Image (tube, rainbow, N blue to C red; front, top):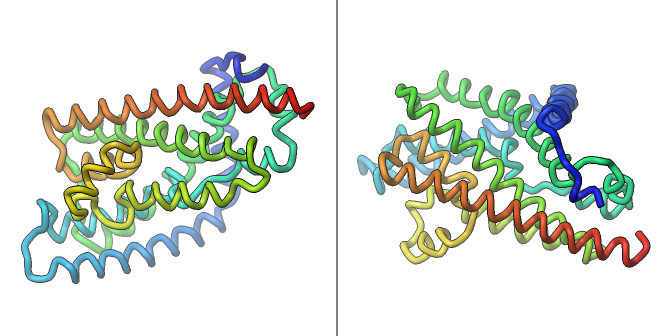
Length: 271
């Protein structure tokens, strides 16, 4: 079965490159999405600044950090597909997955390569552009230490792996359900809430922060944001990056195991 096939680095890079080119072709959609992201980013910044009021900072985040937080989270919407991702689910529903599984490449690697290309295109077209607009409108926080940028790049890469592993697992539900979108909507809403997209996790009640730490969601978005803002340093930074790496490895391994069960079910039923 193709899920056990290999994926060479050259083939992975070529699939990712073609995915980037495909997503760069939809520039008008990217501009429309960018305008929407900026609008809601400004709206969220206004709400958080109103909540901050006359206080200098809340849980270590001042006005400058909160404005930067809204920009960062809006910039990462497309990169992490925060609002949901149903591409694999759709191929299962349409039956196209049968031909995809016949490809002499790793099924998981094929989808990961495509997702990396999609994420890179989203980060360039909408993420970087949105942060540039924010820099023109506000006095936002920008790391000046090269080590901070290196930690951020590592954290962003690990965040994408965690996000992909989670989204891939959710999409595999389509092998067992004729309409798995309901499962997807619940899972992605839960992830959006516990990842710190709506509000910094530091603002949550302590019991909810503790509960969130037992899920992979903070590793998707909250960790890269706190790395960018310089909130995580020294031992805390190392621990946060290690947690991201562990969640990425665990989710990708679990995805591989579930995929194996899913494809076996497909063969048994003559798919």
